[in-house]
Image 1 (cartoon, rainbow, N blue to C red):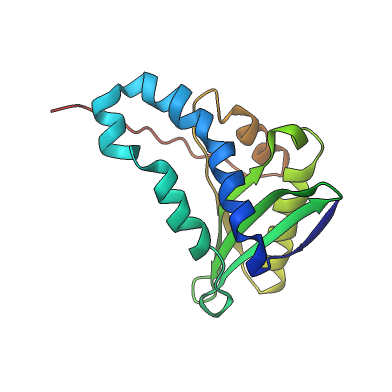
Image 2: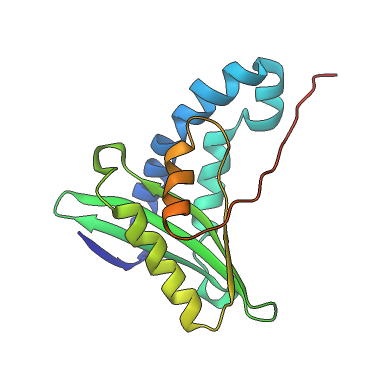
Length: 160
């Protein structure tokens, strides 16, 4: 497995990977929990949202970077991060690893790659977030193993 810089030709696969990675959360986790009305209001266009978000993740002139993990089969994961040097802060925006390649340390290597880049730029604090639900439990375990400190947040929805 190789970690490399993003190339424009990677975009279609990254969008596809993102939708495949997070689809189970939206359709099997979030929708059943909150019901159709809240789901439609909050994330009813989640696929389209990712089609717009993923292309905007990489803009080096604006402090936004993406690294890709690939192997002979193709792209198997990626990480997108950004930084604000005035505040010495960085943020891992997204991490996605294909279901067939999870549990092999790819997420760890991608996060460490982003953390290393941020540290080299002089960033002092990096933020990475995830959900508190069962779907996101592996991400929470990964971030804890990387030495990240969790800060609990609760979000409540109410249909009016």
